[in-house]
Image (cartoon, rainbow, N blue to C red; front, side, top):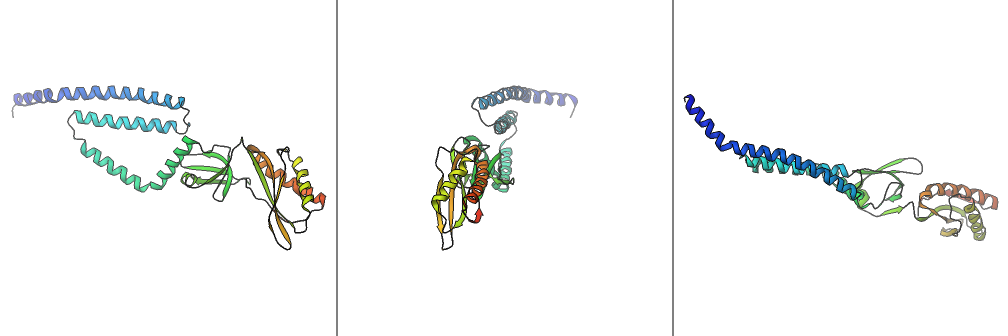
Amino acid sequence: MDTQAIMERAIAFGWEYGPKVLAAMALLFGGLWAIRRLSNGFEHFLKARRVDEGLRPFFTSLVDTGMKIALILMVASMVGIATTSFIAIFSAIAFSVGLALQGSLGNFASGVLILLFRPFKVGDFLTVADKSGKVVEIQIFSTILKTPSGKKIIIPNGKMTEGPIENIADSSEVQAEITLLLHAGANLDRVQAAAQTAATQCPFALIEKPVEVKISGITRDDMKTQIAVWTMGQHYEETLHHFYEALRAAFQESGIELLEERRKEAV
């Protein structure tokens, strides 16, 4: 093949594909510019809607990546590259990753729902199944609780959304309840009076509300007594501690015998 034939084929190729390549490059650079502007606008929209700070980067990145993938497919199609195989390969990879990470994806989806709808927030005191503690951090895959004894409990977000949750919010009035085992012959009037005295010694107790004393179980030798004082949600843990110590002192002063002392953290 001589030089002239090669030149003629090159010119013909340029006339056929040159405009497509130029148009594709214009679409690529113009599309990238538009995507950048749209991503910034979407981020400002999320801020205006007060979407959680932990979710804003994720949603912005998701939208940005999705638009860039669509742009690349459009550019490839414009220059004559078949995109069907790319879409099939991408779908197969996405399906495989989804199967391998279905547990993590479930926790991720639950984390997104928690951060969007906020059934609880940092600072609330939760009871989830048999675990209780104050929420110290809400992550995208898990929620971290801190127990009154200082332990950290990491609960997958899937568990946080699949069952009931007891939530003691900071701004709500709640009961801090102590369970004590008293002698079966204990005088309930003296118990009530001692409990009321203990409440006045508790710095976070709402003393305008009466202390509640209930008998939850009784045998020939002992009775299980639940004593509850009202407080604000943000002082729940401190109230449990102070009220327990004040009860011990008040009972000792009143001559009320404690057979067994057990604390129960419940509303």
